[in-house]
Length: 576
Image 1: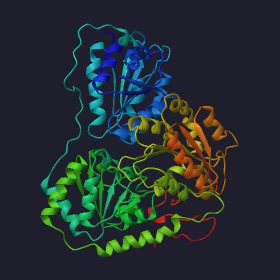
Image 2: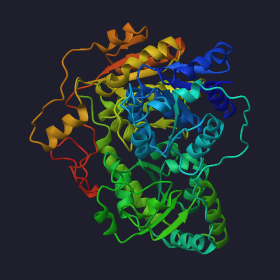
Image 3: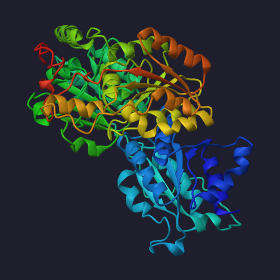
Image 4: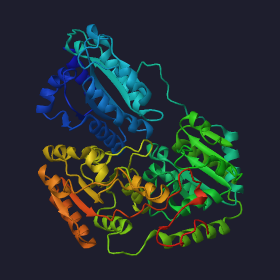
């Protein structure tokens, strides 16, 4: 058996069915060993059009299914292209296993053709990276990779396999039963005193709020969050990626808070006296000013699988280390033993006032152009409840943050930590491969879409019927918005010309394409695209003067929120 065959067999033993990648000189032996498995249907290889997209597709697959996605690239430019996708998965805690081909061991360190320091460049952007030294290491490190990627805080793992190891022969193969790696996932610590303290803080709070992040999604703890919220009668807010943890139609869920989050959610978090973060870190996109939050003198509590997050930005008063589902169930048991104390009627009344007040700004009237909130409302009406929606990065992403209603857990995916333009389409491809029975939409902007739009060819060739809805405003809208609002209208380097025609661009790949003129068109085109079940692109024209609101001034505090277009009126004070 050759090393490449051992590599493929080891992947199959980890349950791998789909691999996203691009072949090259140094991973070509592995591709040769795919041949029979691809022919008999045991494996599926999805040929992406750029290695970044391969990593995004594996990432989307992982988020949709909850199991690691696999991608592969050759050494040198293949690996360097892969890095953007890996750091995207790393920032958003998504389990990806990347198999990279390396130069022959005898050629290392000699500036050989396409030689790159794969370990050096991937180590800072992955959870673990290893370069194999011997053919016998292959089965152990493939097993290790999947274990490391999927346990504890999920993340990407890189396994670099030199070409000569792939070409080498081995007679006696021993497949490991257990992992063997210098890594231990963070343990769950159940401390009765800490649980009791947390429970009493919540019971004695006059204005409690729960902040959920993606840790809730990965722990499958949505049900426990809802039970806790209902027991306390307290509102729930989320981070931007934490949207995927909560159904938008849960009555006590207010929405995502933060830089471009819902003003009522951010204000609720500010005014609370106990903020309980579950599976969420205190990031600078959620809490734009740590001083502002600390000045509220509230009690901060946190459940997190990663203890290093307890020391970033805000130091919680109560910390619980471990799996959110396990710890929430333990906390609920303590709360049930202690029983309810008092009520939060006045707090509920205040939260409802905030929701009513800010609602006047979230649905601006038509001004002769299609409005983003109504575009997203129309999409929601046209698709099934369990539809998966991915986004690119830009204004459209911020509109989706506040206006898209994802109704099932694990159904909204976006690049939130890294903010990687081009994430939307390839991640949708990966999600559709993982969940072929679900409708999968890429909600995108023209700027972000064009960065990886060539992967429409993959969707067409591989018969992956994703639907891309592209907001076409002929500009890099979020950058333009900052230039317009905060840089004295000095618009530079952001506006596109007439190229490309999005519809013709999509058709050139063989995808179905539709050009929207009104909301009725949009609804009917989505329904038709779902029925036709082929890759489709729906172009939606958007005014380049449209703003992503709410927003903050650069470096601004949550209390400085801007909720209406300051260019049109003075209406829109951030506070009620």
